[in-house]
Length: 419
Image (cartoon, rainbow, N blue to C red; front, top):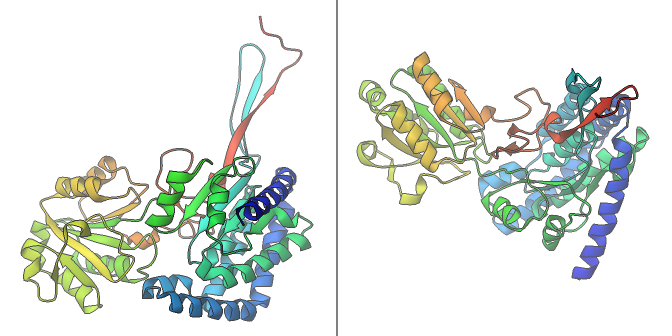
């Protein structure tokens, strides 16, 4: 069986390489046309997609997926509309390929340009969320890359139905259908095949939980856009506005608990707590959130004692850790120790505190008086995202089409020789 999977990977990879070579010089108009056609196909075939999603939801229920994971998996007409809007938004964006990033002249007579160019073939490994099939396919295409998609076993039917629509768009625009390929098997060994496919894949983007990302980072021979778990913090400073804080904290935790931008730890300044009491905790409890805490906050009825590993844990559920801290510096120290450099928010009306928080933390996304749930490429105006990169090389934060390019140097002379 391993030999069959290796042969499958080689076949998929070879077709992707051939498609990438053509996409590198495909016109902006044809790429946009493919995405607009794909969006129309998704909407026209939405019932087919929803029927496929029902099969996946049944499969997920049999596997015992948590409510948060089932929410990630679930599609409805509103979410299908979101896929359509995302495809159209990406289609309308400026083509990132061919951008002149810098140019200059040298005393030797050379004119040098640094120009954006596609990465080549991108492998995307993801779990649960079938919309990633469209988001990743569209962003890679926009940036002139071929993409090999390996969705989670639980979203197999939904991803296949969406992928069919993406291929339809490519076909109608006259672009190679192999530009967006979906691994046609649930066999987990195909993940390992992708991680070893240095001949065919230029970069791997993992999008999923700690287990998947850890596996990819341990075993990949292909370069990886790091995407660690989203241990996102919200810090209510002593100078936070109470009503803003209540609104943001509740949204950051409860809007959708299964996404990487969901808040997992609430830090409350002692002076805020002294002035306003446990209102932020009480709001969460009323919303059905389990609040795991320690010390003074345990006096709030309904809270439970935190285990040592609850700080620095991605719950992806209606659970949050909470702690009192003494000022912005203690909040920063806590986040440095327990965070994953994904997204952190400070709630404050104090400019100096916000500036200190922004300067001294090195997470990919830092927010002031706004929910961590905004950690999303669509909300950043990218149309969609392929993931949130928490590493420091090449791409960081939401990875959109622009981040899926590299560059090359174009050097022009006039019979110029080196002395």
